Image (cartoon, rainbow, N blue to C red; front, side):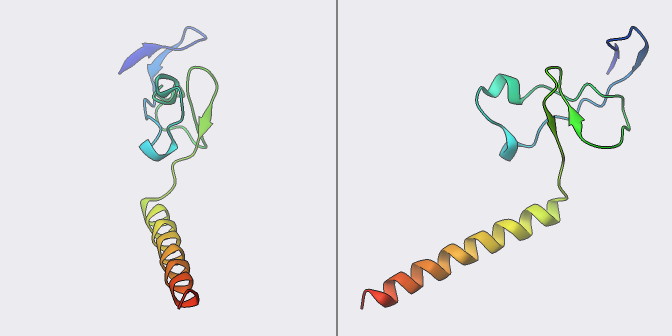
Length: 83
């Protein structure tokens, strides 16, 4: 998508949107795309200067598995303690 940037220079914008799990209320604001140049380094930034970092999918998956495993451990520990 080719658009003009704030300083008037034409160029390709990044356009990446925040991952679904990082969306916050109001959703309209959370869905604004990154306005930094395509191929930029560092965090993404939307039109109202909110920034976010895309984490590697493997890390997101590993953290989710660890959280679920901990919840299961606690659930079974609570049920054992209730006996």
